[in-house]
Image 1 (cartoon, one colour):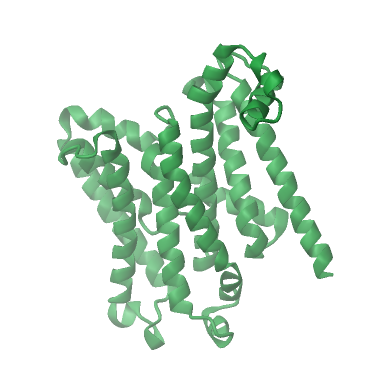
Image 2 (tube, helix red, strand yellow; image 1 turned 60 degrees about the vertical axis):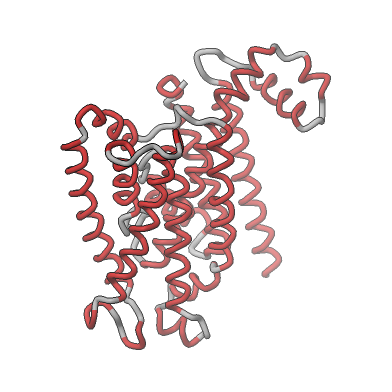
Length: 323
């Protein structure tokens, strides 16, 4: 029985990987300059040294369009969808709240304030990377602030044995998010000529994506995903309730803290370059849960793949807006 279930999971993941690959090829093909999918496959095979003869016959302009313009944006979008879906799945399981998403604990507002500061008052000490760096710090700082406030909330915030109820974390996150929203409004009010830069970042987009941004985003996203997946069984136990999970020998507070930190890091890594794009982390876990069920051992990779595919599909639908 377990073998059949394992085989079913593998088939589901293979189907999702295949759908993602097809979506990437189609998105790469569509644009002001149409590139035939056969040419794209030939170029990919050539880069992998599988059929260099076929790749040599592809016009040079196609190679430039694909590898210098389209693929960086596609792969960055893939990573963003991958990360937000993973964070959304984690937080919905952790909070046991279907409305939870990566921004429920103020991550988006913290990132927005960090970006706004870099565009208004903070010197650009890292050049073009100052905004994503401060957006990343703002998102992570907000998460630590929410956890600290919930932990020191006295009788209302801390449960028996020093436990922090997820309701306290949720309400604290909403309050902190509203506070940082007010800070952002003030920064936009005093921004003057920099106001349009803040608006552009808040709207989100992939128009500045290059391979360097893909490399910087890929490492923390994939690392955080691997670490989150380690806690899949613990998160399954938490769905039964904190008391039940504790009787199974799980360090409930430790797991909650680690998953919150990892969710913050993976979300911050995703939004640092593209702005606050939040809907993926809210809806994708629900869609995937219908397809594969609530077991996080399969839900995590499936949700990440569906999130990546969905984000790339949005690029396909709005290609003329980005390319």
